[in-house]
Amino acid sequence: MNARRSLVGLILCLAVAARPPVAAAQQGDVGPVYIVQDGDTLTAIALRFGTTVDALAQTNGISDPGSIQPGMRLVLPGYEGVSGVLTFHVVEFGESIGSLAASYRMSPADLARLNRWANPAAVYVGEPAVVPEPETGGPVPGRTAFLSDGEGLLEAAVRLNTSPWLLTEAAGSIWETPGLPIYVPGGESRLSDLPNGLEGVELDPAPVVQGYTTVVHATTSAGADLEGSLASHSLNLMPADSEGEWVALQGIYVLQPPGVVDLEMTVTVDGVARSYRQPVQVVEGGFGRETIQGVPAETLDPANTAPEDQEIAQIVSAATSERMWSSLFEFPTSYHETFPSRFGTRRSYNGSAYIYYHTGLDLYGNPETPILAPAPGRVVFAGALTVRGNATYIDHGWGVYTGYLHQSEILVKPGDLVETGQTIGMVGATGRVTGAHLHWEIWVGGVPVQPLEWTERLMP
Image (tube, rainbow, N blue to C red; front, side, top):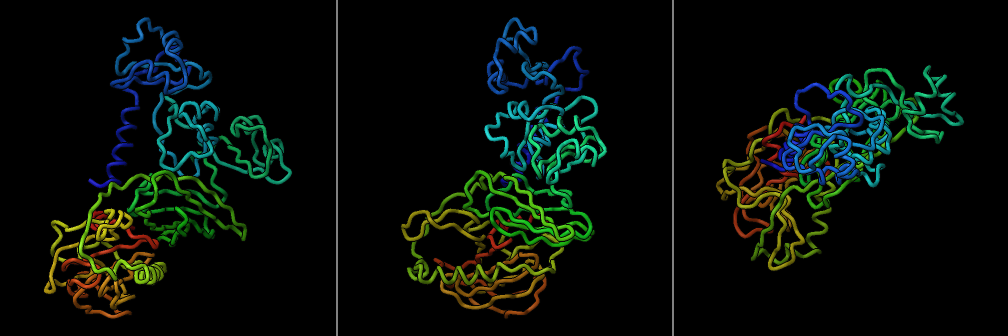
């Protein structure tokens, strides 16, 4: 099971664990309700939600703090005016502490306290935020507006045909500054801070994973234009089948430190551009280490590696608009049950430090093993290189490229169109190798990614 699936499973398990058993609400619940889980103690619950054991015991009529049982409903003291059963909501792009607080009928300060957010401004996409889910009615729907220059809440209320008191409560702020998001009750959407014209952005997966492909789906109003970036890489946003629908594929650098990176989207409507930026969590891809001895010294010389890396990076940086694949990618040789080396492993060459990483997936073979195109595409490079040996690169559209290194023979040329299963070369032992094999790469948005994912997951 890969890291992306494991992470999604973990979040789902957490969400299920936090949901209450099917039971009627207790009369007299005042404050958010926590459902006791296996292994919980009153001390741990108090620490988690910023209260004390004594306060929890007094509020819930508990005489013996050690007697709590899984499934018990505990009202959390100190959150007056907040109601609902605590569960997880996975934060979407455009949701802030202000919009989440307004959706769940609470103050931003209470929401920050529930989640122990030291920096509420850094609520990140994919984060499982603890929220008090109302037992009837659900989160408050509505829409987001923004204060104009010189406009206060009273003027905004007149413009939006609502009460200024509702706007003040929803905004969670007394500061009347241009661009301040204000939340207007009513409507059918979840509240968010997305600018006008940008209707929604989804990441798959979220959080994003080192070395894997992230799919960005975005929706804009008709006629809007859209640009974006993820982890400082410009997104290759392509119009989808329906008007206002956009898709981009972006690889996450395998050495990107775990933590957060920024996702920024800029929508342009009637010549006016508006941007929104939010952190996205990056989690580890789970890659190991390996030591390799006996590679040719010239293939480690920066005088050779630097210009070659730059040449390939330039080739795979372009994004053509035609998506040429329509199914899972196939393996480029018939030997794909086991692999001599996997993508992403940190490498030591000839006794060096582990300063290298494996940019592809190695497959077994010999000079009599044909290399097959895994998907339709156009050849953009076919030639001899010092490190990569005899190499071929194919453009599949939308910023997706595949590479085939160390060949004994190249059977295509730049400009050739290839189909799935077509022989494009023969396995070899040229370049930085210790024996015959095929090194297979997939690049997405200018970043090498896990090839196995593309054989298991159909990319849009």
